[in-house]
Each structure stands twice: as structure tokens, then as C-alpha cells.
Length: 108
Length: 115
Image 1 (cartoon, rainbow over the protein chains, first blue to last red):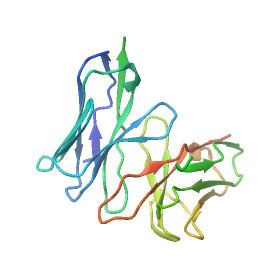
Image 2 (image 1 turned 90 degrees about the vertical axis):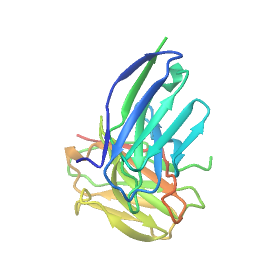
Image 3 (image 1 turned 90 degrees about the horizontal axis):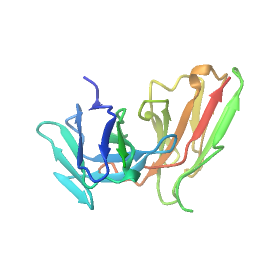
Image 4 (image 1 turned 120 degrees about the vertical axis):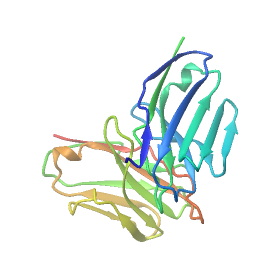
């Protein structure tokens, strides 16, 4: 089983839509979880940190289910500027473990 | 700008040449990480430092790769005898030390093209 599994997408959604991404991880010892967004040919930028069961920041909500080892990211009222790749990142012992990410394309 | 910086931003080299990249982390962060990213993949961990100590190296880091952080501040990543398969984006990130893994902040990366 891969350490991190995400649907690569692309998810094509209209502006204003709500979209959700799921991510499963294999390391049950992971304590910290992060969502990063990455624009084409740019570095990953931290979007949200999740240390407990979830986190909410404006239009973005992350939820963590430790028993099932999955994390979700919900984006409400999608904007054109949300178009990017979203990386689910559980922590390892001393490093972050990146999946391939889920690509989101928001269209007018 | 107090973020992570990397130099150069782009490097084109011929196969067999040596290249060196530099990373300057956020000043109060004592952990520094190197990742490599190829098209369509997420970043892959290469190595990390806590202060000047290199604490872990990935199996991806062949003996042609060496990283240093001599004074616990900036770091260099050197690739000797470059191969075409080394073409990738090399990302540096830093984070503060803590009891749990903290967020990592990435620099803009160095894009290496080996011809």
C-alpha cells in the first residue's frame, strides 16, 4: 500500500461549487497532517494544518479520521484562483510524506 | 523577505558536470529539508538537517549527492557527475523544532536541467 493515496483528478468544477478531496495514509503513527497547494511549476504552499480531528479556515475545511486513516479537504464557493494541485501530507517520524496530489480546475 | 530562499533558480548543465545549489532557511528555523520533485509527482524527501547535523538520508540520495549545513544556517546540495535522470526541481524547506512535526515552508526551488 502506498504511504499516501489521493485521487489525481483532475476535478473540473464551476465557480461557486463545493468540492471535496479525500486522502488515505498508511502510517498510523502520523500525528500531524497538512494540506499544501501547489501551482504549476511553483513550490508547495501550506494551506492548512490538522493536529486534532479537523480544522476550518474560511472556505476550507479539513477533517481527520484517525480510525480509518483518511483526511479530507472541503472547498466551498470555489474561486478561479483555487485552481491548483492539492497535496495531502501526513507526517512521518522526522519528515513529511507527499502523495502525488489532486488537481483542481475551476472554470467560469 | 524572510522566507526560504534558494539559488540559483534555474540551472542548465551538461551530463557529467557537477552542480551545487544553496538554500537559506527562515532564520529561526533549525530544521532544513531537501526534496526533489519531478513532473506529475509530489516532492520526494532526500535529506534533512537539525542545526548542522544531517540526521536522515533517503535511499534516493546516491553517493553522487552530498548535502552540508556547516554552521547550522544555510545548506548546500551538490550533485557530482550529473545524469539526465537528475533533471528535476530541487526544493528546500525549513521548520522549527518541536515535539510534533511542524509545518514546513518551502523555497521557490532550483530547477535543474541536465542535457
